[in-house]
Each structure stands twice: as C-alpha cells, then as structure tokens.
Image (cartoon, rainbow, N blue to C red; front, side):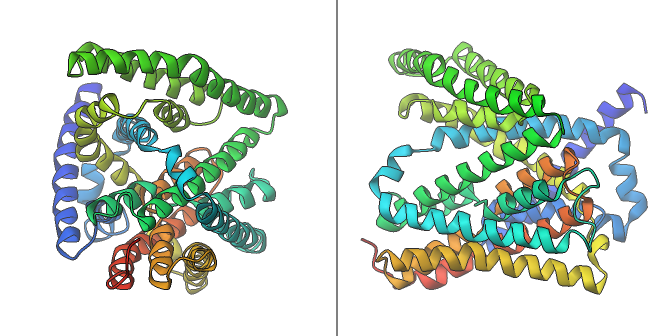
Length: 411
C-alpha cells in the first residue's frame, strides 16, 4: 500500500473503531460496567478472536498489516498522554493519611500476586510456550510477577469518584494501596526491560538514566511546572501556548525514557507526578482528558485486540493454564488485599470491597502486556492468556464491589 492508501485506510479504521468502542462501551454501562470495560471487550471483538473468526476477509481488509504500525504509533501517543494524566492524579498525600492500612494492603497486593505469578512462570515455562526463547527464566518470573501485581488504578479511581467515596476511609485506603502497588509493579517492569537486552551496559544506562531522570524532574522539572501553574492560575485559563509547552515536556520525557531502554510511559507518568495539584492540574484534565479517553485510548484497545488470538489457547491444556493463572490472580490480589485490610481493622464489607477493587487489572495490565509482547519478552500465547485474565478480573470488580458494600458503613 502507498502512503496515501494507508492514510485513507486509517481514517476508515478510526471511524469503525470509535463507533464499535462507543457501542460496546454503552452496552457495558447499561449492565453496570465502566465504559473502559466495554472498550477492552471491543478490542478483543475487533481482533482475530471474534471479527477475524467470523469474517476473516472483512477483518483483513479493514486491518491490513501495513496499517498496524500507524495504529501503534498513534495509540502510543494516547498512552503517553494518558499516563501523564494518571501521574497528575497521583496524590502522595493519600498514602500518608492511611499509612498503616495502605502499607499492609499494598504489600499484600504486591507480594502475594508477585510470588504466585513468579512461581507460575517458573513451573509452567518449561512445558508451555509462554516466553520467547531469549527470555531468561528469572526475567520471565519478574515479568509475570509484575503483571500479576498490577492494579487498574484509573478504573479504581473512577469507581471511587462515581460512588462518591472520595475522601472516605474506603476511598482513601483503596487509592493509596493501588497507587503503591502500581508504582512497585512499574519499577519491577523497568528492571526487566533494562536487563532484557542482555548487555550489562544497557541495564546500567536504563536504570541509571531512569534515576537521573527522576532527579532532573524533581530538581528542575517540578519548579518549572510550579511557575507554569502560577501563570496559568493568574491568567484564569490554560492558553494554547501553555498547553503546547506542557505537551512538549511530556513528549520529551517520554522520548528520553524510551531511548534509554525503559519505556515511554514511565517518563510521562513521572512528569505527571511532579505537576502541582490545583488549577493547573484541573486545566490539564479539562483540555486533554476527554480527547485522550474518547479518541486516542480506543486505538490502544483495538491494537491489543489485534494481538489477542483466543484460538491460541483453545487446547484443553492451555485453557487449563489460563484458568490456573486466573485463579492465582484472584487469590493473590483480591483475596490477599481483602485479608490484609481486614487484618488491619477495616470492617469486613469494606475489606471485601477493597479486595474487589484491587483485583481489577484493566488498562494497566494491557499496557504491561503490550510492552512485554513488543519487546519480545512474552509470546502471543501468554499475551492472550493474560488478556483473558485482565478482562475477567476487571469485569468482576464493579459487581462484587456493589454487592459487598451495599450496607457498609463508611467512616
């Protein structure tokens, strides 16, 4: 295909993707699920697992191989901006408010799924095609542990906001524990990506460069953002120039962390954390939030769906492995977090609600899985297994949360 033909095809893809995501998302909302859950399912539906199985000719015509790099590039921009906004929402003060309970829940939510995930990788990898041949067993164990330990922090925050739980004991504890878990999981993933090249110097550059980036953002980036925030608040609005300058910083941070061998979303997230809370942060969400979630993120779900091939795991033994991973994921995250919350003195219903929220993987899981597939750490088979796990655990979150907190007394 020529460049012109690819661009024409891409516009058609965009139209179909946005329509399908909105329709499936609307259906999800109608049955009590968040919009993002519907978009995750829409990605699987549009891929070879459903659309490709029912109408392979049409699916191939709509998504020819030549257009896949374009979808990937655009969805990466969406991911970078989205993770920047997640960083903007990241409130370290929440952790300080409920340090004891948050530490217990987050440690349980990291340690239990990490051990179970790493153990599953160790015992299953020799028998099934889960990791690429160049992946060392310890790298596979670290990756699987991190993937099991991740939490759908954006969806968790959305549920808490929609239910009016912001600032409550339950809401604060869940957000604090979820943020700690995700930060730890991303750190583990950074180590895996840094070591995967097999060259010690690459790992040194990646880890050292990542630490240097954090320092630069803290020392130079944060003061610059505070100056920008003051000017924005004084003007009473975010100008085009201010928004453009902020996005330039985001893309620069994404470029740097990508070039040193970690991943672009790390740079965007860390810069987002440095953004001062208040008018400036709210203006960023108003200017970037809807465009990112309604236009750019659906492309990522479709890209993930194009890599998800349910046919790879239809064999009884592979379905058994998928079910095992699902059970381990629920036990390691949902059960362990609920038990930890109860152990620290939370009411039983609130503890169960926290476990339900922490068990969801959502978009964050898909990001990690796509990174692992793109970098050649995991195989399409494991990718598909883990996507199924992410969808199921995310589907479970809202119904269980609504069920168990029905008569809970929020403090």
